[in-house]
Length: 281
Ligand SMILES: *[C@@H]1O[C@H](CO)[C@@H](O)[C@H](O)[C@H]1NC(C)=O
Ligand SMILES: *[C@@H]1O[C@H](CO)[C@@H](O)[C@H](O)[C@H]1NC(C)=O
Ligand SMILES: *[C@@H]1O[C@H](CO)[C@@H](O)[C@H](O)[C@H]1NC(C)=O
Ligand SMILES: *[C@@H]1O[C@H](CO)[C@@H](O)[C@H](O)[C@H]1NC(C)=O
Image (tube, rainbow, N blue to C red; front, side, top):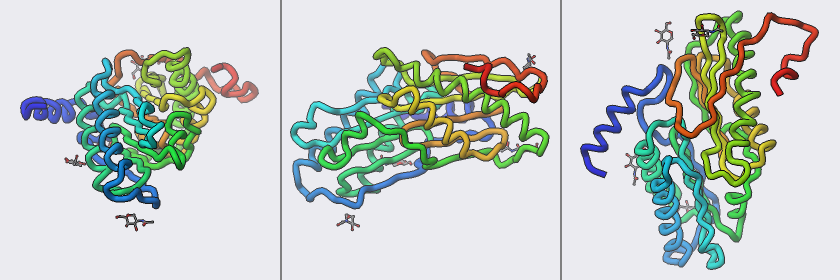
């Protein structure tokens, strides 16, 4: 990538950044396995190739934010790799830059680790030893632990918190299954959904949800609901696990192409006798 292109990305990121969002690509979390591979072993050499390949494949994908697994070399004991961009980050160049940084830094942060995960605000890179739990990258179980979160420091007031919380639940109830179903039937689309709902006549809440490929719709939904519930009720936030990601803001943010877009009707006047979730399914 040329310097000029890098400068354009930096400018674009600053311009597109919504209040409360990060204008830069930054590392937020990493985990190295305690088990090390032997220096100079074939595993270390294949690891470099696997990381290079998953990052290149994600970069070549039409939308720039594909989930990619490396499975061809598994017979030789090479690690599984995973590269995933969060589709709300912006255009594909943002994804490519993030993945290159993550792949470069994961080997610096975890020298000789047999398995490792590194989260950036805009992307995720993982690799794992097939002899240990590597296959979990290809057939993931939902990781319902919030690994990292950002949120707007302005807490909502007591009255607002109820309205915001209800709006967020309303959105998540629709975004979670939409994100899970977006990749069903073998569709290679990103497993992501973007939505909007009104908080009041003047205020909207915008939400985004994304799961890694290979999670069942039920597991994607469980993952998203758990990490969304882990956020405090403010005017914007993001939560990350190793298998899903969610974000909400009171201002619109980047809406990726080829993503399910959902408008959720505002809540009707409160009717205490009716179950709040039943109407949404
Ligand atoms: C918090 O609220 C103040 C006053 O409304 C506003 O100026 C500031 O930008 C807000 N901070 C964030 C992070 O949104
Ligand atoms: C693995 O390597 C790291 C970094 O070189 C080192 O800190 C750690 O103690 C090693 N772990 C084991 C189990 O040898
Ligand atoms: C590591 O990440 C930082 C930003 O978090 C980036 O500036 C740097 O170039 C990255 N290093 C490598 C080797 O990719
Ligand atoms: C929803 O909120 C937007 C502003 O965020 C407003 O323009 C629109 O009229 C509202 N719609 C309803 C049905 O309240």
